[in-house]
Length: 386
Image 1: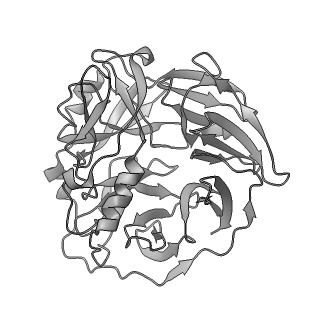
Image 2: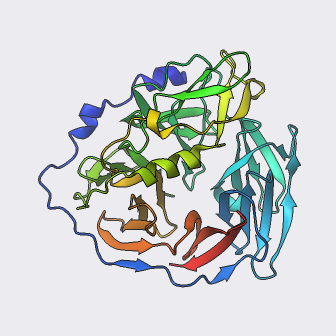
Image 3: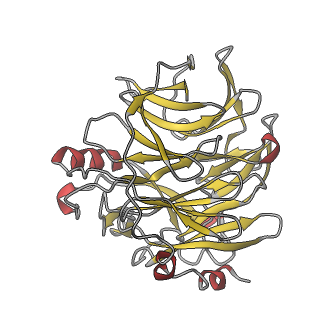
């Protein structure tokens, strides 16, 4: 069945909402604990780390978007070697991004520069690859995989010149690579804070419009078994969808709303400056019709800001290898990053604070990898026990 027809079968939000209990007692947040000093820090700095995957022997694959490099690191020796090379051909990449774990210690590289997905074998050899664009122009940008190698992504399409903005709803899709077919897991409202771009004229520039930064959004993640967790901003709770489609909801989590300040607005605009977007030529369904563009720094005064921040960051939801769900909270500007950790039953069992100035990059077995940017804008990769 064509992908567009499958999307028509998306579960309406109203139906999905009926599965949510409405009279459960709210969960109280436990005491926050800060991660202890790092177990290790890699000896060499990076420029802009965009992906990480720990292999079973302890080696670590990382992608550096600014340096256009994929490297295989050995923390014990402090050495690394380059994987593949820059270019449009086989075994090459243009803009390395996420690194997702595939079965048998293989890794999936998301390459926005070539608009394709490439398998990296355990030896570091670049293997098979395929386009991120389907025959009907849908962009498959996987956010997760399960142990069977199925890819999970949101069906949002790509940015196209003249687009009127994102659709009213998006689907979480499960894609079977071997069968070349996908199924809809759930349907969610489209995020109001999505970027819509139009050409500003013959100069080739683009303008951001229709932005609603820090708007409440639904987030999701998938674990190795294929269970999907959807995190709801309304009354902040988690809905669990198992591989058979059975749903259950955990009790809501109590939280204190954090007001949006001028410092928040400036920090958001600074973070958007020179961010990278992907443009797909109208009518194109191949990687040759895609290109990356630098986004301009938006003016915070032109944006539609909420009075308070949502309870969590929708893009910062992920499963750890032990099956726990990590949901990153919104906090006051300048405060340490705090993460809610839910167990397999949906209970909020702990809160973890990252050391100041760190951001999440990936998990390993019993560890988390964080990035520290120094005063020279160099990034250092650190490993912490969890």
